Image (cartoon, rainbow, N blue to C red; front, side):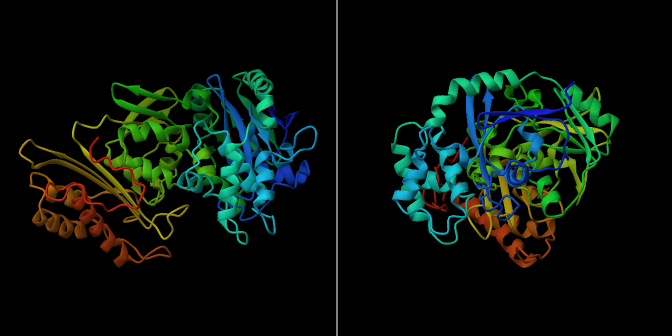
Length: 491
């Protein structure tokens, strides 16, 4: 067992034996290391001014990802390589190609947001197959906000940087690989001090033992939610147990039951595999938070926090996903919709944690749709999210329907009355009307800062109309999406 975390900042190896389990990467960089190029803006993972570059080995390949330092806890760097804007110059003092392009194309005015933009841009340059299309660049930079320059010069700088040869970081690939392999000892880390206790389990068995011994501990995967408990809620966490750094929970595998996504798998890592099964889920995942948030936030963490407006759960419920839970040596399976009992209450025993979620292989010809409604297209919380899975008999009747909504109740919830109105019916306008009437009995949404109850109820009914326009025999193929959506009607 190890009593310290270990990682590299630039070319310097750090081994830190005692610190608060809620110490953020941003505070450590600015206050302890005086690396003030990384800025504090919103301190909640929205503005991107604090973006840093974290490098890890996935298999035998280095993966470079942008993350928000403000809501990343310091211990989350264990076993990683960290770069900040101060690391980008060459040994001779030349600017990084991204920095040079930003200078030449006037990508900064006040400059406060610029280091975060630059780090996101460098990470995008390291992405295999990074596209020069503006839609792809806009998605990559959606987690970085600028209030004075405007985004057009920044996008032009991104395009120029993509066309230039490699950078100083590329020359360090072999060295970084060797470093990270040396850090990967598989040890459990246990650190205790006056500010709290930290456990980084070396494997799932160690996690089960630690959590069963202290069920009051806080489980943390990506900290995209828990981080705000600390930075905004000023909460102290007496005992933190990591889920996100457990190696055997970072797996995605195809099993006889379906696609199994481990509890430490981020949305970025899972997106391609989920989209291959459920193409419409790709657009929803693309709009979860930002690149930095998806690089840290996990699919199972989005389930575990029990939010009624999490984007992932309705999609997975409609797809028939099953949750895998573990308590000590005991394992059990639970249909995902049964995990959510009431607001803030889930079907999880003391000491029990989510090991994985399994998404079953869609039935041949199943129609799957998912729609997110929010005030902004990028980086916004859903007012309503509807997910729909329909299968049809050979005569064209609806054989089965699974419909789930987020934002319509205190939990992500299936629309049982709506499903009943659809099953066994031909997909006609009369059936649509009956389903919309039934939906009024399924939900009693509330009014809050995101939308009114009337709006939610109206939009939910309208999403059924959109589903009908895209999938009903007489209307299939009707365009209801923003330009650029990849039409793929059946999975």
